[in-house]
Each structure stands twice: as structure tokens, then as C-alpha cells.
Length: 317
Image (cartoon, one colour):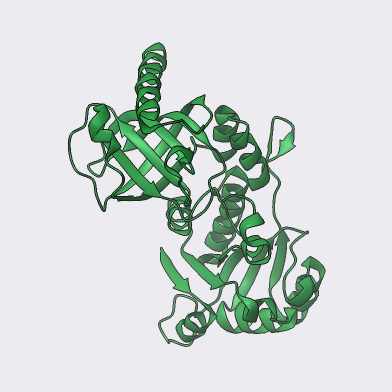
């Protein structure tokens, strides 16, 4: 897997004589937030065509996501940060990820210039897989029909994405977010093809975990999460082992939190994890996030949460 950041780096790569893109590629374009079953089917489509044409497979995505650029704080919650998205795309078997910065300059990009500079000159596109509702370029002037028209003239094919249905409805990032916001973790897992998890680096916190007898893993989140509250979780440790625990995800109202964060109280663990990147998988909702009158009241509730979590885990075994 190779990561290319920006169209300038892409164009430099494409000019190298030993470039992976020297004969072109098969590509798809999208946000791929969550890399859910629908995205996985698209990647499979791209990989299959790339294998037949003996070309590399490429996924083009954007940072920030376009809705985040246009809507700011009002944008939908993220399912995955960029690193987690990249890792999931890597696991899907794609050969290359092109990450394009979505800023004011890119927003002003004419649709025809995007096709010429990104798809033809940069990727040397041979086959493109996108949805028939895909829009791009300044004022969203580019669409599926424009791509088909230019493709006929320039010699590349354009193929529609396949729809994946679960429980009678199309799989989408919006549907995954809704399932998570409603604490329907089982449905979210079906749509994603795996249990929902968040990854991040452990930072120093308020050290409350030491006082309640459960080490606390504090992970600062770059984006507001799609779910809020207290959950039974399992955490993948740096050595590959797993530890159960209780997690609070949200804004920590009792301690006047401003930045979204994930706090995990690990069971039966006494080590140090600062600076490590962990994966926290959400198993079962316990309660909503609430503001307590004091830190002591919060500590007491965490102890109750831990007992409830242990009881639920015991019931599943």
C-alpha cells in the first residue's frame, strides 16, 4: 500500500519512469468514511477490474471531508479519522490511496481541470468506478455523465458502483451514523462488516482512574464521535492482547470538557500506555453521558458502571 498526499505529489510520481502508475490505474473516488460494506464492495469492484487489466488499484479521498469544509462544526460526525480509514483501506487490498486536501483552492477547481490534471495526467486513469450521483468540480458542475463523455474521448471507461443492501436498505455512512447515535451497535456492525471501533493515541488525563482502582486510557478525538455515553468496551493493546473495560465517550461535562474525548477504564491492568495507539471496540451501551454535581459522584458512578460492565460481560460467556 502506498499513500500519496496531494495532486502535486501525484503528478511528480506519475512522471517517474518506474512509477506504479506508468501504465495507468483503476480508481475510485469517495470519502470512504467508515469503510463500510458498501465501500468494501466498491473496493472489490476496483480490485477485480485492476487484476483483469493488470493495473494498480487506487482510492482517491479527501481531507478534510467536503462536508467538513462546507459545514464546519455542523458537519456529520466522523466514523473514522484518516489514519484509521487508511488502515482499513490497506486491509481491503487497495494498492494506493491518494489523499487530496479539500480547501478553498480545490473547491474552485473546474470539473474539466480536475479530469485533466488529476485523472488523466496524474493517475493516467484507465478505468474509473464512481456512483451515478457523484458530483465534483467548482459548484459541483461535474457529474457521471461528464465523466462518461470525456472517457469516450480520452480512452478511459467509467463504471457505476454496486449497491449493497442490508435489512432492505442501502448501506451508507449516514445509516451507520444513525445506527450508532441510536446505540444500535449490532446494526452498525452489520453495516460495517465488523464491530464499531475508534483508534487513537493515549495522552495524559486527570489521573482519576488511579483513585477509583481502574487505570484510565485517555484518547483525545479530532472529531466529534457518532455515539455518546458510557459503554462496555474491549481494547486491543500494543502487544495484540485485549482488555475489557468501561468507556465514556463525549465531552466529559462533569469536568467541563471542551474537546471530544474517549476515556477507557481498563479492567485488570497496571501498566503505562502513554503515547501508544489503541483500538477501542464498543460492545454494549450502559448509559447516557451526564453531568454530575461533583467528581466524587462521578467516581461513584464509574464504580457502578464497572460492576454493570462486568455483569454484562459475564452474561455473554
